[in-house]
Length: 118
Image 1: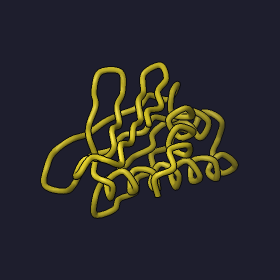
Image 2 (image 1 turned 30 degrees about the vertical axis):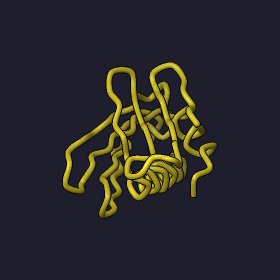
Image 3 (image 1 turned 45 degrees about the horizontal axis):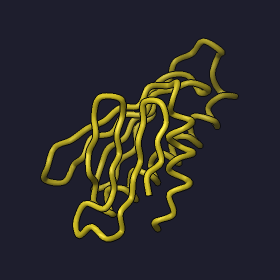
């Protein structure tokens, strides 16, 4: 299963042994384990909810950075509650990081919600 849009890709192949997931941006792509992909999904959802909740607490032009971490990866949302980037860094043994710019984050969040692997 592959979902993609302008500047992002999300994929899942249940038949692969170790790296079942693919996440990518305009100029990068990484294969992830199931645990890493599940962590990415959960953190993206939590950060999305946090950014939405912060909207009523901030001035209209106030910029915010929120971070969350699991044993598998660290993720950051940076920007405004209605327009923010997502960045993540793998924490388990191998290096890798990716970033999605604010214009496509809503599509990435929606794409993650539509890949039913859990």
